[in-house]
Image (cartoon, rainbow, N blue to C red; front, side, top):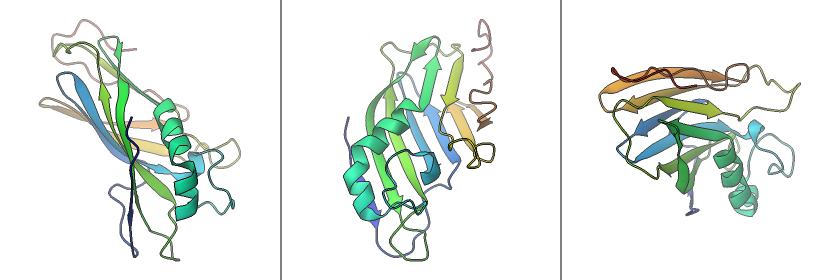
Amino acid sequence: MAHILLSAPGALAHVVSAGAGAVNVRAQDAVVLIGVPVSVLHGVDDDGDGLLQPQEIKAHRTEILDQLARGFSLSVGGQVAEVREAYLMVSVHAEDGVSTPQVEWWSLLAFKEPLSPTDCAAISIHWWPDAGKGADETTYTLQFRRGEQVQSAVFSSKHPHPPLACASGAREAAQ
């Protein structure tokens, strides 16, 4: 798994907003880009300010990527995708021009076998702040694309794996 950190100087907008993202499923892999708030990461905000500083990102890059990979699951037709590549993309957004309240997680997930166009898909997200710190406030809205099929799904701590529609001709809805 590759680990690359991209930092942009100055107060730049993020690639995607925290809680937003896209999943594009292809013949044997999927590309994922999701904005994830710092509040869902554990043990990486050393100064406890709710933001990640460049030194915190550098010190905890592998741990951040591991937490993100463990908190996201994609399966299609019963095959669970494995993270093959993962990157953190970081652009500053806080008033200090250095720190960030979120990271953008880009990953390439691979399936062992080619996918059937009629296989059902299921996504599960488990990136929630600790209870009492707004766990019910964090939601993710993902655009799911598979061929010509495009749909949006909203994930929350109460609904970490909402159903996705199956392609026409699919045997049954994904669990």
